[in-house]
Length: 382
Image 1 (cartoon, rainbow, N blue to C red):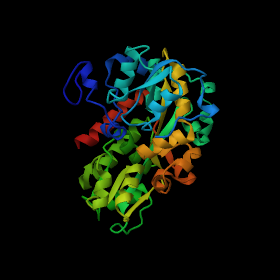
Image 2: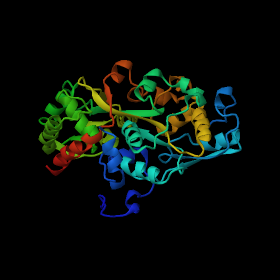
Image 3: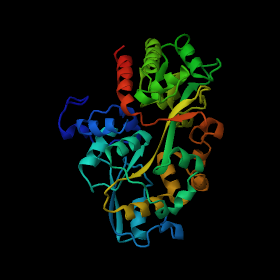
Image 4: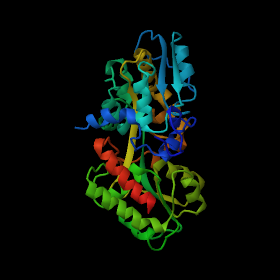
């Protein structure tokens, strides 16, 4: 089997470290790893070190825990400060991971004991369970989970919540003067007055997801009929798109090259930093988002160290260093006092309860993955 770059063998999963946003831009839907197909389908039937007591989930963690993560997707001094706090323990952030969910899960499965936990969203968690590499967390070892807001514990119940993002309509307020409150408005305006000046995300789950919401369906539909309708809706929109893109969207909005975009909330937040003319809306039909966190791995050698680090990471002051470094939406209101004023004031990064209620988180869809792949391929080929 070859990947989209035409290479084969194990090296096909690696192309250098990917940032969190680059990973999203590459897409992560297609199950293209033969070694996992059987289990997959079968399963479907700088701050200073904290000195507070809650930072010490393990009295004396020992050994090096290996965590699969994206480059710089952690506070800039967290790893070093944790080691100062616990000299017998250390953390290795492995940022050279495969560029697909399936590739990551295959690597973990084929290297038992090599990894202690991995950053992943709900589809990643589902595939890890299907492959038998998921470990139920020792919740008692991480008392700082109490700092995570209840809504994110509920939405991401089987691992340690860390961050989230969701699709919005970003637009130029000085150009788009018509009412823009729904995906129906987006489709109508994109197909008429603003044809050629509109973009959508180049992401299967996100973009087919908003088409499903536009049609009144679940963003996690497993219906071939509904997915075909969503694909057709996107194909109708395609002649009017400037592009399907997942990078430089904020720059295009800020410069006025794009007047309306289906983008992530953080794209709107970045664009607003550059232009006072950027508006954004969570559509009335609802939208699609991801919530992710750190997932313990079965057979890990140093879970005690990993739990101690995650507990340390969830200290509000420490966690705020992650938020300040990445500009991500955060899952701890307790960290608010330590998040920079600019991020706290950014409405796209800190949605209201009403806006959060409109987000449907991307879920593991099992055998329906193939249906989604077919629907997305039709849109790409049109």
